[in-house]
Structure formats: C-alpha cells, structure tokens
Image (cartoon, rainbow, N blue to C red; front, side):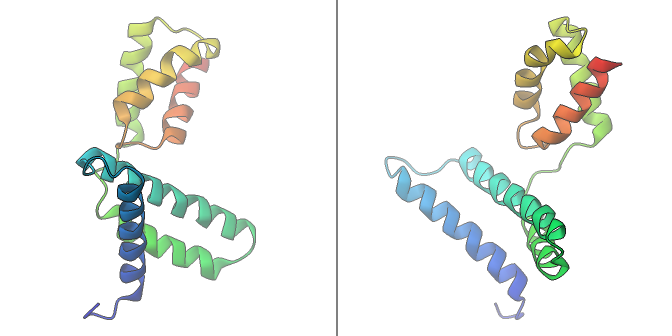
Length: 135
C-alpha cells in the first residue's frame, strides 16, 4: 500500500477475502496450509479463466488487468511442474496402471491429478495423459 501498487493491493485483498470467507464457512478449525493453498490455486485459476474470456470478448484492457493480478498470485504459489516433469510422472502412472489407450483415461487421470495437486493445472495434466495414451 505504501508503494501505491494498486494491482498487488487488489490481488492480495481479494485473496484475503477468499480466505476469510472460507474460514467463516468452516469455523470449527483453523485453515491448514493445504486449504489456504487450494484457495490460492482457485483464485489463480479464476484469473486465468477470466483472461481467456476477456480476450474472447475483445477486452485486452481487462485481460491485462487479470494477467497482472495472476502474476501477483503466482508469487505465492508453489513452483509449477513443466510439461516434461508432468510427462515423467504420467509415464510412471501409465506403467503402474497398465493403461494402453485413451479408454483407460479414467484409470490414469485420478492418480495423475492426485500426484500433481498444487503443482500442475488439471488441464495440462489431461493434455499430457491424452497425448501419451493416444501415441
């Protein structure tokens, strides 16, 4: 606030608001680190989705605003896995489950999402799984 950085201020205030709301919803216990991380991931996903929609609606100004807020939130996210790292994990899961075609997607995806939770976007994992199973 002292630096007059409005983008950072808005992003962090909205994140704080989401955390407080989650705390009010389940007041029986304090939020764990994992629960706060899930809220942060959800906020980042919302920014990504909004950017796509604003770009479709020919609103580059709003898309840029969402991108700036996303950049602020990404400072607090754990390091995201690269596509190559996701591929290594997925190849191991395919070997474990014995999956051989796209019909086996429902065997691989739940395990892949669980192992990459918080470190990779589900959409990215899905693309890698489909690519490897269709090859």
